[in-house]
Image (cartoon, rainbow, N blue to C red):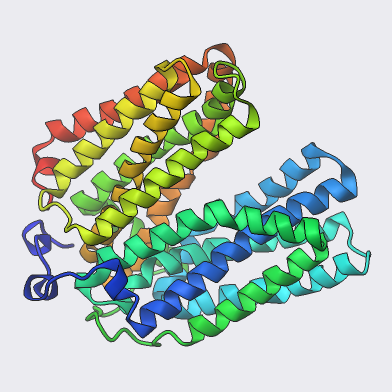
Length: 423
């Protein structure tokens, strides 16, 4: 386990100035990772739009659509730790290759079935399940591969570019997917999806098989095969105080935010603000613009040396602003608060992930990143279940409670000398 003193600075980072997001795009290996990420993200959104529209075309049932999404979400959550362990065992590059190849191999036949009018619902459920399984392996690998592709000094710049790309895909991906479905057909949307994964596979193949910029520690051997590796990853993450603090903060903040934004925001847009679907789009769009701005700034500005205090500040920042969204009387100030809050998420997603990548033993990168994603997404179904009844009674209360949870996280972090000393 790394000590606090060992993680204050990297020798590479100390010797060489960090570079900007524009400069890191000049790296061939990083460009290949970036292009593979773009194609994977757009492929995911194309498949989401196409599957949703296909289910509604076949059945007209929102209930069945929800069941398809559950079939996709469950294996992704259950197998996330397995995906992280496999990335550490096989290397992230090989795991990404297998994931991209499987998605292309399964979605192409589905495109043919839809275009020929022979598709059935059991096939849709099967594809949804496969996508959930593959996502559980691809996502930890994608998060853990960056330190093997770029130099230590480029982690913030690289994460900034990837975060900005993710935000752009949230905005553009569904729009492009919807346009393809509208202009051509659902089948051609699946065909475009398969093409994106196939081309993305080529860019993953072009990634270096072995890191050329990071000294990788020897593999950690754990008893019990893959299960032993997963247990070893959990022990490693929990025994490192810095990683443990980040996991707790991520779990608390994302639990609160997912409930408030996923359930409370549509309720507020429909009821209190009377702004309709367009108002909801404005609120989410403001959050996305803020997150993009935060990630961009983080790519150019060096991270704070007092990382523990950054956790305190971002938790308080989000708590005040998310709580404020529930208290303001109309759409415009709520959108402004959402935009400013989004800046905080862009900052922490860039600095926080870079800090974790730098702190984590290279042999444990996949497992730690899978635990981080599990902390972020694993409690989302519970957050939705708890938030629904609260929003039904009083959506303002839901936002105040969510903001209060984030502020409590900030107070708890500030009260800990160990957290305050994190660098």
